[in-house]
Image (cartoon, rainbow, N blue to C red; front, side, top):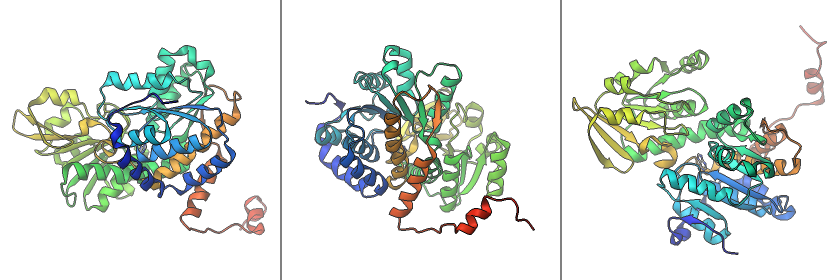
Length: 420
Ligand code: ADE
């Protein structure tokens, strides 16, 4: 049967296929799971609907699920993150129903989510919770047939926990983001590298010696700060949580309120998950040429309407750069329309880190399918054995050996009698 799909250009499949294979070479853990899935077909008969960034790494996840016997339909989890060549390759080479066009407007974005829901998924994969929330708002009749879902990102987990708290969540969700082998690596090293990659590709401005402000010192903010420091930037952290601010200070970063940081910033990057973090009062004090980028899931962290309202003129000096000229002549440069800079202006996290995130996804889908209807409509963490298995397999693939406890050491750790 020919799949239904909506993509930009089927002729892009050739280069898309080559890039998917390039990424696959960096995803050994997912490949091991795929080989097992091919042999044992644990997902036979399952319909999976995914709202994920359509990238080379997601393509390898989709192929793994398909190798396990699942039927997969995909839409984008951000209007600007779709790699059109990848979408084309998945349609041409795998018969996967992909509904995603880079740069799609909001109506198309939601039409594509509905198209995935039309495939009657039994398990949903989300990155930001737009698929789950649309299903709960518009397709309540479909809820009983869904066994469960997974959530990839911090913002999505926060939304889904809020749904569960309100009694509005109709089926169980496993928060893949909360697995150690996901957020400690993907959020930190993945965002660290890809956000810097996006900023550098978009601007080609030297970071060394510049004031580089990171809003939020969660795992993503830490990664961005660490990598900006590696480029020789003078990194400043802004935070609202005392504990995180203290950590940032003791990690060697300057910490101050954003209103102070904005006066000296050459770059401001948001990674907070909250809205209007960079707002009118900050724009008013920024230096000429300040670069603004967002690395959080939604394009709400920089108040773009407030910036538009202050602007006298707009320019588009480079791909992914919008320059706003204010009344006093200062120019503020917004990257990627305030959307995820790592996916909109670069290619997202590198495959080697998505390897762990998507190994968790694949094993969690298998777990959900095995659980059937046993789970309650709550937000669960990834089972510990899955998290540990991913860590072990990744170490193995990296050729790194570790020690094991002796029996004497195990007994010592389980006892209380021996002291000083
Ligand atoms: N999120 C961040 N980077 C990603 C990637 N490369 N693929 C899918 N989702 C992502």
